[in-house]
Image (cartoon, rainbow, N blue to C red; front, side, top):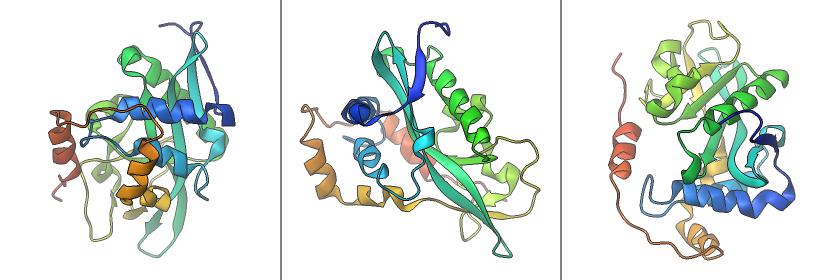
Length: 218
């Protein structure tokens, strides 16, 4: 891979179904049989937390092979002070192009643009194996947790601007943009718009379960 064989640009309306199909291909059977990430992409675009200025696609030879999307979220300290931050996801690279540097290029581009928009922190839920190389660290390193003092292993933090988080306890509040994914009937109806795919078990689903249910003891 080199910088001359791809372009990164903002998503436009004509890309919507291509991006949704790419997301479906990337996540199918990954976390559970089937997936709902393509429906999340679909409904996210009309949510108030969606940041269209950070919805990027990566093109190679005129074909979209990757994308990333962001939502506004927040951290709240123990005094009630709210700090606006970002969360991204889904982020995908077509399976045929994974582990070749395209995901790194896409994320690094989006980080630069996020800083230009005035953001200094990103918090995500993700597999640490996929994100520590991009500068993400355990939420415990920054004293960022969920309500109830839970420090999930999958809750990862990246300071876009060094030393932004000052050690005080922060409670992470995610966006409600993903809430419609809880409507399994709506997800199934949306999925009928795409080519049929087989739902099945694979080992990555157990890995997802372990990461998503593990917490750090403090």
